[in-house]
Image (cartoon, rainbow, N blue to C red; front, side):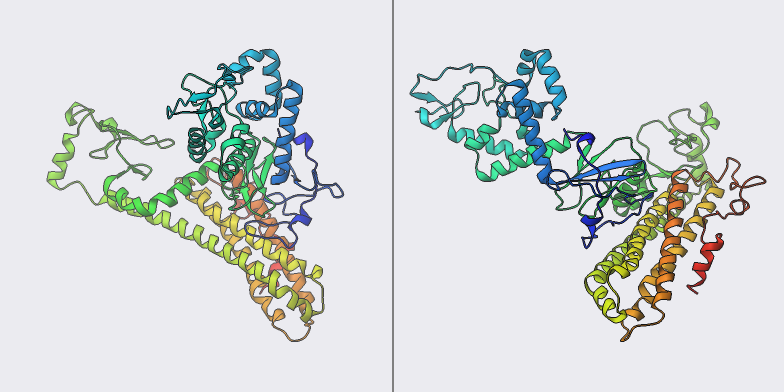
Amino acid sequence: MVSGDNLNSVSMEDDFEGGDYSDGYDDDYDDYGGYGDDDEGQGLLEDEDAVSSRRPKQGYTVLKEAYIKQRQEDDISNVSTVLSIPKVQATVLLRRYNWNVNQVNEEWFADEERVRKSVGLLERPVVDVSDASKFTCGICFESLPCDNFASASCGHPFCRDCWQGYLCTRINDGPGCLLLICPEPSCKASIGPDMIDKLATCEEKEKYSLFLLRSYIEDNRETKWCPAPGCENAVYFAVGCGDFDVTCLCSYRFCWNCTVEAHRPVDCDTVTKWMLKNSVDGENMNWILNNSKICPKCKRPIEKNLGCMHMTCTPPCSYEFCWLCLGPWSQHGSNTGGFNSCNGYEAAKKKGSVDTKFRRDMAKNSLERYTHYYERWASNQSSRERALEDLHRMESELMEKLCNVQCTTKGQLKFITDAWLQIVECRRVLKWTYAYGYYLPQHEHTKIQFFEYLQGEAEAGLERLHRCAEIELHKFVTADDPSSDFNDFRTKLTGLTSVTKTYFENLVRALENGLEDVDSQGTTGGGKSGNPRAARGEVPWSPRASGSDKNVDDTSK
């Protein structure tokens, strides 16, 4: 199907200039979410319908719909020619083998008869109806002239009305219509696109064609559709070539592995848990408070799903305790009812020695902790959306006005767009750091403190950049005459953009490496032979720890 060998590498910069920054950005924000240095001067494949982006340790290609259709037609023609079969049969054959041309050829030449039987491609009809003038439909049992009948390759005749009803029902049921077989219960003959073209309505033909096109992408493990609403592009990804962040031509950035929005530095499993928690907790937290108990060791809420009172918390906690009294299971034997009950619990409850409020308080604390992280996650998402709106407004309204006031060109104001794009990306990264922090093991106190320090530094640096691009720029936009301070502002904003970008790149790497600067003894890396700044909670790439960056930072005061 789509092969990396068939796709040239070209620059995507021109495709994004003045484009829709709905959920991503262009230029060369490499390393933690950009394009890298693409080779220039190479043409686009197939009339610019395939656009490739190559980044360090990663390669992916954006495929436009027209290019996908052409590739699909080429594969069908190729199989039809090589195997000497009609294109209709070639289409059915490729669909059954997930559009894998090589596998189709190998299987066919190894055992054509077996392939025909398994797929339902008949060499000749099993029913001869050439001499009949009337037929009885096997579905409605009406006898009608032969002109009102139709049959697939097997020859079983059914009236046109029944065929149309059958095809309409199956097509409206979804992509399963691509595996249609003859309505005759004992027949396994495949129904190809020729019957759809002959009997289906225009709307049904359009649906069938869409299902066929989408299957060409969805049945290949190296291609996926862009999940952005309304986008008709697909992405070819060289599996095993690095991180999964890709950017479609529509500017939507997403994770190719899970098709959720780009979420580095958080892995896909964490994102799945976090998004599920966000969708469930609002409705179910009250149920959790009233129907679960808290593990006495790790304090996570636990629901009892089996009859035994012997509870074992999930790893890495794995604490074993009694469901009734929450005491260690090692202290439970025949004197407390063994494996099925805890007589000591009821006795203690009657004496008033069991704090029934304790577990509810722990569940409440768990909810408050989740709320802390979720509010900041959602706040950065809102800030990112507002930054995208400001970027659109800057490009559509304010950029031309600024050019006129400051007597400059749009090309010389690209540093402003770069700053806003960096803000948008950093807000995304910062948002996901809160999901990362929520799932950090609570017993690793030093690692949590180190993470919160790095996160705080990132947030402070981003706020300085955001304030400069949002507030300090305003006075130049609203000025009546050119300002002598504009060049100083350019230097400052460019410097803050560079500093913030570098810091966030290193922050992402540190989190993806599991904060390895914190050693097994719970201290930050450095020590006698390490970096002294890391040993006291700083890192050499922190804006506050870097002398060269400090000069830029001081300009914001």
